[in-house]
Length: 398
Image (cartoon, rainbow, N blue to C red):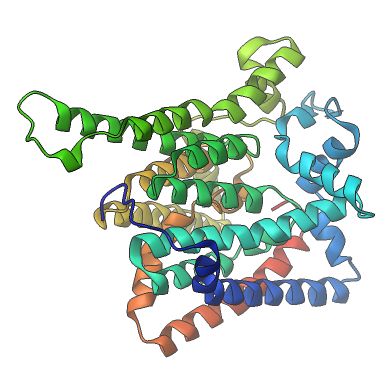
């Protein structure tokens, strides 16, 4: 498999039929997670729907949808939490749903996330199926569904929407649909700051394609008419390169203009949340502090094993020669998640869009006997559903 295989993709109807088992399995896992959440929340006299739609980041998105930007909270320690930290695509969609239907903004966020999670599952299947085949695609979707933090896929958060846009953008790159890839990268950049990962995947893959064509057309290159660059394809690829960063760049520059702090104004907004990129120093110190007492040291061991597992999965993807856009995208998502300087408890959620990390595990499951794979996935699904219910009923944000 090369980094850009442009074999013909199935028709939309055929693609949906091909993905149907994966989507049905995904829906079943998510239904199990929601059932566990509603039962757990009911036992604690809490509203599961409120946990999904009206707490933590979901509230910030609803405020943007309802009131626009400009809302902020000043904390006693001097920190300023501004809603400018939240990218606009999800609030725009929440407002659209509320405008076109009797649903509230919070209901709109839940509906968007519900539909986006299915679109994300389909996109993950499309990527894995294209690279490794249908059975691996089904396993990849189910693995993404049963993640312990999978309940976030059903929340009025932006992770499902972003993953859907990212997965289909990567699929578009893999199948040579450059304008589609650039447009989806633009939209992903309006959804989360990590939209930079999709931009990087488009840019690096396009650059590699231009370099290959340059070598083919260079002096002394073999005269192979089939290898000659297609001017139309080059133009579409260049257009994708130009489109891809417009979402992220446009919002960041707008925030800088609104705050009066120039192009780096968005970094000041994130600093008000004590969030930034320090190469992982703060996270490493956070982990090290766990070893100053017991049983906190057990949590420290768990964190180290978790990070080591992520690194191992990425390295395995490199050894298995995953396509270039997947490696670039996953590398940037992982680096931004692990090297952020705060919100350490949210790192598993921040890694949720890095679905190509699951492809080595999906390959292993696809090669195992169906009964064994079903047993593993079923057991993890139950454990993940219970953990998700426990997690959301806790005090802190996911």
